[in-house]
Amino acid sequence: MAVVLGTLVGAAGAANSLETKTLRSSDVPTVYTRATDAACPAACMKRTRGAVPNGYVTGWAATYKRGQIAWIASIVTEFTSAAAAHRFHLATYSTAQHNGADDVSTRVRIGDETNVIHVEKDGLLGYSVMWRRGRFTGVIISVGLVAQVSSVNQAVGLAQKQDRRFLGGGTA
Image 1 (tube, rainbow, N blue to C red):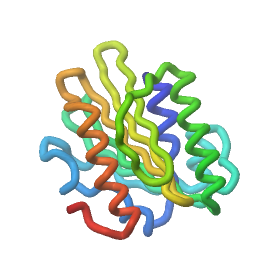
Image 2 (cartoon, rainbow, N blue to C red):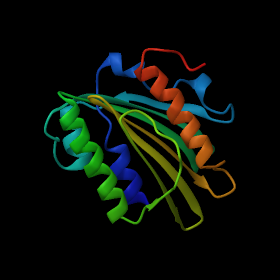
Image 3 (tube, rainbow, N blue to C red):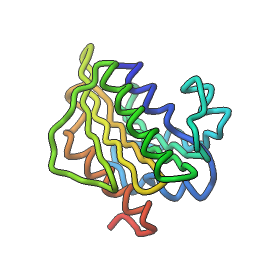
Image 4 (tube, rainbow, N blue to C red):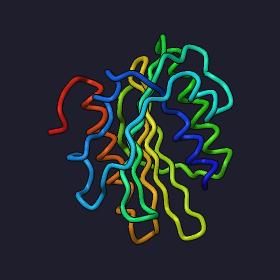
């Protein structure tokens, strides 16, 4: 599970303008508190993923914690083109599947392409919603003890809120 989620968290990058495209404290359930809010420039991407993907510009990640085990990550990455973002989206999704993630069947479509995955291991449950909108990719990861993670619907709802930020709107 750590490999799958670490791969997804490593999908973050830098730039203050991207910070506005991640979830804010008011977007997540009130039982969560902000833990981190950080840029991940190319050097960070290389450190977390082993290489900087072609066309990578920058990104941002915000995380929220509930106790010691449950957390939500809101990640956005920017690429030079939609094609570069598409390749990164597919590579991230493929890596997650290779590391044991299962597809979740939903009718939800966010942006230009969307994948929803599920991982359950050692009493922990995780959902991730990954999508691409133009030259940006977004990821919402919700992880915790089985009793702490609400549902795939919560992760999808948070992804929809974040996607509205991609479009320049609020979260209403």
